[in-house]
Image (cartoon, each protein chain N blue to C red):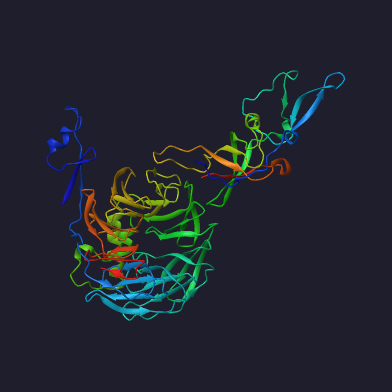
Length: 146
Length: 424
């Protein structure tokens, strides 16, 4: 069935909004490169493709590793490292690129909270949903999905 | 009477049968550990002797006095009622609060009852006459969540009272002068429980996920115990039962409960002796239950790291209690079960299942053999802690049972709930 999330409906982001066309070539005629204009998350071991061949450019200034996650019941906010982008509601392409916009479900490292399962194992990853527009604010605010 | 254990398994039938199930080398020395049991035996309560009406709103808390002579109940109709135990009828109605009475606490000598209400006021009552003693204690800005008196063996006059409130502060009141002695502030959110330990330390648990340990002498913060992932709802000390009963020894109880007699010095000595006996050589242990479905076992006087994290519950934990002989910890949870854990190491013993809805409060009998639990499914169940099974089912309430208490002399169990009547 459907899962209930705090931000159910999000305005879909079109390609012209998220990706900017970069012109290359001696005469700046070739237009096959795109630059991501929104905040994104790249993993730990991320290495760029050779610049001649990379199609999507994710600028270092827009890469974030941490998110401000609020626990809905405790009403306390923690700065937790991001583990990955689970789903971007606008397009599966953005999910694979790691683009974070409002309404994206991300996975965060919650070992700081100290939660345990019934068997005694420590819970270290949980999903959270982004609640602001990170490219406007400069930070990622999210709500933990308990 | 003694109970014998070989490698943590109790010897019930014979040594041979117990060893048959274990692999023991014939060349090694076998350690047989003995544990003294209570000298007296409490019989299980089997029937409801009376249903006491009187309250006009739900009964929130029920408490027997330390000797079992008086019974008091606090309710949402802003009154505290005293009940006569020999005739099982209402005795006094203490009016004075202007909002719901949220918590009540008997002083360890049984001569005063303190009650806290939603308007952040504390009243003191005399159980013999039903009148108010002294002045109203005001000072907190939000409602009172918990009250706890100073133990008898530290001060036989029972002068100081600690109160915890939603505003995040703990106030220590001088009941003789009727004013606030100390204010302990450090918690950032509501303080859910406060306990006055027997070693000069005060413990407070809060919704900001921490437990703070204070020195009761001067109100200085000693330690902060962190580890819980959600609100800490409840706490229990290993010496809770002996601090509650003070100088009264349940083994010497009579059919007609009497007040403890003797001069202040005698009472203090007796209480100190009983406390030393229960506590033994080790420092006090503290167990805390929380909304994150786990319990922590701490030794707050020594370490700020927990001894053990007890997991297994599937819903939030409402109350934890040490058994009077400090061997077993019982935890009541909203997942319809009560779990028993070893009191010294925190190891899981067993689950008691039988309730069909959340278990709200539990109470131990004075010999640590029986446990009564009240639940939101309107029944009470008496469990045998040694057999780890259900002993007796006590239906009869019309609606949820909010509060349960077993009298320290073992004669009666009182329970009150949403159906506004008290059952004994």
